[in-house]
Length: 193
Image 1 (cartoon, rainbow, N blue to C red):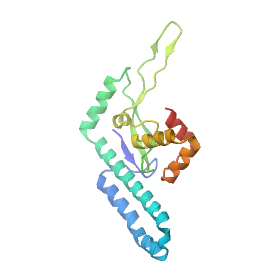
Image 2 (cartoon, one colour; image 1 turned 90 degrees about the horizontal axis):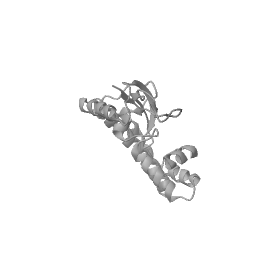
Image 3 (tube, rainbow, N blue to C red; image 1 turned 135 degrees about the vertical axis):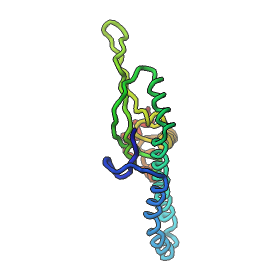
């Protein structure tokens, strides 16, 4: 079926979780000396440095999760489960076609997922002149509980922050402080759905 890339829309698919871990280590290792130098030069800069390190490791967690998703998608058990989901959906679905779309993970990593999108095989009539329009299903994303182009973890954080803040603008600001850059429109859409 499909696959996952973190190198843009046309990037190569992730094969192993280890490649993501090695990639993260390669990205973060050179920064260790810089972080140490900065903290030695100004110990009062700890808060800024701590937030920077936190964001970097959240990104690393996102790369690791992308690797895990990619590896699981390559298993026969996952393919069988996806086909069962397609067969048992509330309306009959077509065999589908592969689509590539972006998906944001909790750590802020944007991954590109190529997966099967299955449209309803026919429109279902409600009455003489009414036609019920039913949307299709991204099969692989449904297996992981992904919707709205975001992971379930990110959806949970955005919804919770939106509920705790008096406005979507403040929720957006708080999410940005946590290293999750989402525009106001996206925060509102996620929270209201």
